[in-house]
Image (cartoon, rainbow, N blue to C red; front, top):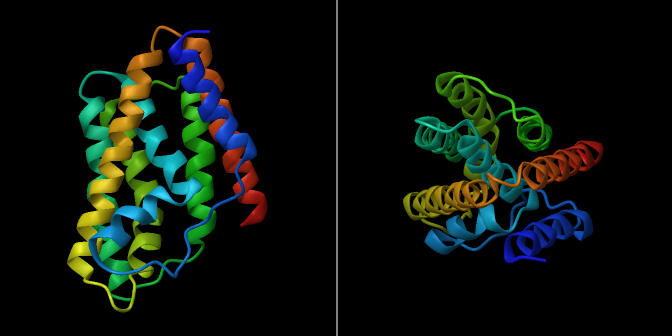
Length: 191
């Protein structure tokens, strides 16, 4: 088994054997809390990596436009969440984003880069609201925001790299999309 296959197997096993990890309060404060927040929620990790993978599948300017639109709208929604502006059904929206992104990858759905950017921007609103609403009481809002933005961008970069690494292995890529979508269904069942 080659190293790419091993990486995909590890990714698939992590989805299959991990518990549902929702965004939740109780993080520390500042930059490190912001960095950690997206990394310690399976829902956030799956969605943000999937954004990068789908962007790579689409190719061309979608590779930068799709992740950039996610980060931009997530930052705006995060600021709204920090300001106390609530959004209903955040957990359901996050879980739905995981499901839909998985399906977009699994079926290799082709849309224009602008339409793809609009789709992920909608998902980013839910992720940003979750990040912003959970700003630790003792933390610096600006440092926390910088942290979750940087962490999200890094996860998108990981998704782009995984997409590039498996572009010639379409079956593995589609299987990963199915695994992500399955994670989304599981999360929706618990939402």
